[in-house]
Amino acid sequence: MVFLFVSWVISSSKHIQRHEELERKIISKMSEHEPKNPFQDRDGLMGPLVNIREADKIEKLYNDAIEKGCTALLPLKRKGNYVWPTLIEVDKDRANDLMIFREELFGPIAILIKVDDADEAVDLANSTRFGLDAAVFGKDRGQLRRVARRLEVGAVFINEYPRHGIGYYPFGGMKYSGIGREGIGYSIKELTTTKTIVYNYKGYGIWEYI
Image (cartoon, rainbow, N blue to C red):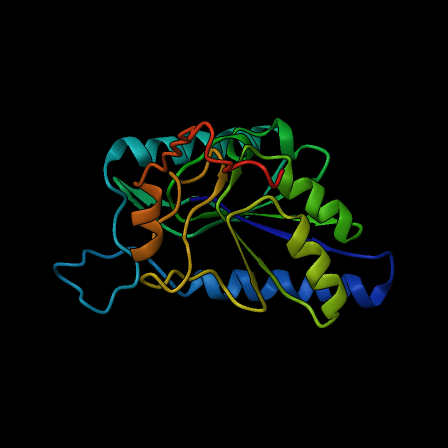
């Protein structure tokens, strides 16, 4: 799954510094991890991708972004189907031209985009054909609520990273993400068909109140 970091920055030194700080922290945290064989290293947090084909796909989309002028903050590194965390900085005006922005893939790669305000961030996020999860961080509760309502995704986590409990709340996306809703009770409802049967009891006065 591609992780999209959208940082909105108003043209002031204060907000630019916040963006740069966010960028440094993302790079630092992603650099701490490397893929390992789960059968040999039980402490590893990342394993290999499911097969070579998926690793090849990530490399293809990465190369497409770099060829179109994007900046590799953490360049792609792989050995077979082991792929290290990768981070690309993308210009907001080029995002929709990138294969990595238009296609769904499952691998440790993220893109970072700087925009001017919250509305532009939401419009950019909604411009993809996918909509599984989103996480929004901030202190302005009013703005957080407005952003959460506008995002076209199955779940919005405010000041928290996405996580999926077992049946606590429905899990599933919008548009091309997910298949219906998962979660114990929600799965039953998703797999249940509702049928309405209307029987006309002529002369019984059932509909006289209408």
